[in-house]
Image (cartoon, rainbow, N blue to C red; front, side, top):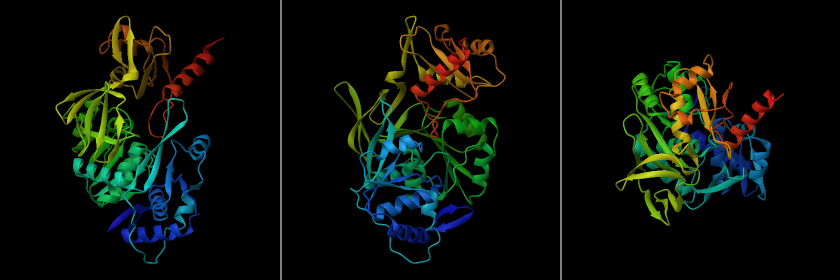
Length: 413
């Protein structure tokens, strides 16, 4: 059975297990490892070796030195890089299976908390396996997997590491980002292939009318996927486009086929409940209750609709909306490649940053008037070459406002 596709060569499951055991024998005797591998096969190989040594893998929010340092703070940790891991790539010696206790803390996924410092969320091996099997049940994935998101991100860990590992899909080792690169990666994979990606890559591929040979389906996450974009993608590629709703704390919570349904369906075993005026999820792969930070509206026992984060509500001139709704309206305008609204503390008007080569502020505001109330039209409206998104495609309020401040400083005499 083919486990992975690495640099054009197929790696069997037996060869992967042998390499994992060989690497495990060479690892330092520490409790933690920081997996910094960019090559997806190398990441999984390092992850497996750490599991064999009963170590816990730390997954920083980025590879920036300060983020890695904060992730390791107070922990006896060592780094794992592509070069160190791939030294065990071609190991012919036979080995036994990779067996892990269900309650072993396999990984700690870090996110940037409200203070900007990484906050860790522990994931047991049992919870990761249960989640991978639940995802396979929801989307019926088979064949192989190509991912544009890093495996250190919770979405990447679930869809490009655990899903294929636990359900017999072959993993492509690369991380293509541009439409042509994604098409090339899919062409290199024999048979049906699932693309695990973000709305940004979906939009870029649809805009380029990129051929994706052998595509079996798409799974998107990290930010909302516009329903019209999902419908356009399904028509272009004639495959289902699924979306995952989740968090680093809980992992995958619900899924939907965005082109066909506005409601989300809870994952197998996961329940949604209310306590003390808050919504919580628990069950299945979510062992401990996790609070929902978004505004949800329930539809029966297993479905809900999503209405943005509680913190993203804005009120201008007595009228209310959400930043997610405004961003979605901005993204639908022809020529807009990326964009985001913002509201600074104490400000009376919204601002926006937009990537739209060839468009003018006047034309863009005129187009926005067709979709949003005039009270929410952005002033100022900044045109930029790119938004300061992380490698996962996320855009923090802090990064956005820092860019706004730098733009304003450039224009101040």
